Image 1 (cartoon, rainbow, N blue to C red):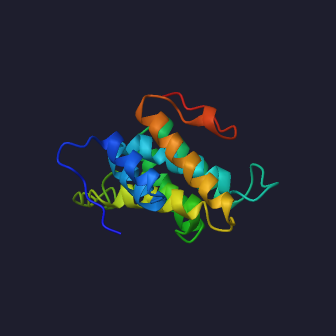
Image 2 (image 1 turned 90 degrees about the vertical axis):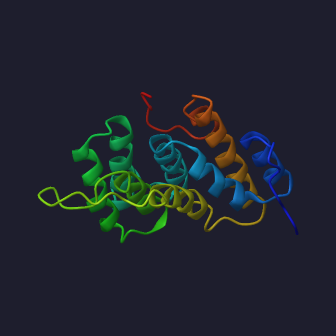
Length: 177
């Protein structure tokens, strides 16, 4: 299938065309790059929370990785950002929770605190956001996958408009945006 972006098309129109063509993964990847980094990490956290196994409460490495990423969203400070790397490593830098934490970590200096700054490649954080959202669909079947993608795109669009995305899906910790 051939698909191109008209020079005059807006981001919203482009996303609508992707959704109409059932190109969900492309829409999610596009949105991951379109959202500001902090909002993208929040979106990754929403998807990662939905992917947690039923009954997983406040314990577990996945829960801790999501909590670390959310802590950075709420207080985007160097200490909260750096804590995300350890949280991601605790889940082997894998899965929706690991990628949500990596997305937060990859928003700033990659060098140890006592070394010269190493800025991250600008593609790292949005790529991790997209991975978190897409990996949250793993284990779902048939219509559940499309429902996850639809909800994820709706959340991203709500976040882009200044919302928090939570009114569209299951309860999540408050985002004091």
